[in-house]
Image (cartoon, rainbow, N blue to C red; front, top):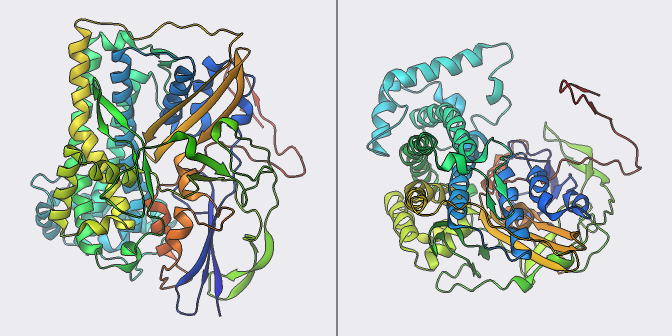
Length: 577
């Protein structure tokens, strides 16, 4: 008899997400449904606003992807107003984007997704000397793996374990689950890098702040270019970025890369991460200008996992529909004409597997009706996966030499075939490979900026907005979680309509009118779960996408009740509820 397993909330992600699967007697997932329980309402707030203010508003769509939305919304307004920004501004935006990617992906693997692969408790029984020698198997220049360093790591975590509150941030996990594959020594190496990555996170955030003024929510982009000209002309500030970049790049090449190689070699026979993915269509957009007309990554579409052909993107074929999303207008809409009229229908009474394995009463997704605040984006009517893996696959299939070299080197070192990229392991590796490519190549943009500043110090273009004209434009790019697009219509000098189609929407959307599943749901079907009370296999798949669901932090009461009120003191910055 089939059973329903609910994982809610899925933690170690940004935003609120719920996964429900129907499991047969053999433990294999027969069907899956994924729901976001937050409403994204920034597009509604944007209407009637001055378009020059939109980028500062749109970066508040998230607390993680702040620069992503800031950048792409700025590009959308510039596209509408037909503004060509200065070359210096393009390169500065690339350097800020490099900082964002290096921050985002390192945090994702070590602090969000990594503990799906690394058994922290197992590390406490590791032999430090043995682990220190083992680290050289994966890189000639290991970081944070000296015998004494590993001993201190063990002592630090052992203190956590002895605390009355348990392992602190490492408590309440599925430690000892039979699908963990790393040895105690390998777990200790990764744990050391987990702690080291906390320092890296701080350094790379400072990199963003050098040109952005602050992090998160940088302030230096403006419609027409950038405003950080004083920083660009200050050799000390430029040198600070360079040194910090090199420090972070060293960690990426000798810790992050090495740990993924180690994980790939140990997990390549683990079914939960090698199961073929459900959606094999991939969509990526050109990104990372490192020189005039020179980009690190490519645009394109791959269909059905066929790497022999890459299709060009036709933006007219991008739509969103809401058959199973909590919105009134269900028909496919192009983003220029998209609507966001909420229609919340809630959950239904049912049963699911409880913590002890017995069936308990629960509120369940009504899969026959609406069940998520996420819409279902489609390209030419088909679901697409976006993200680092899509970016890598499109560039690889297009014969991008930089990407070919790194991907082939990884496959050779791990002994994996190219087909292994179409899996959860491949998705996790793809994110690391993208980070390595940025670490290895972003300084091309830095050096080109230095050279150009010798003859050209322009950073912002001038423009006008004619209130008697109507404009429309879009910003498209590939940010840490995949292809992001913002679409704007301007009329009477203010925003008439605004839509965002974000990466996690492409990946986490519910079924469409044809019953076609998005990548999250399709990937879960066919998954074998060893223990229904510890469904770590579900978590591994979902985390591999690096869900970023927030995209707004609005909570609504369906009866219109006020949930709480906040009063901010403008003089002293205090806040009372």
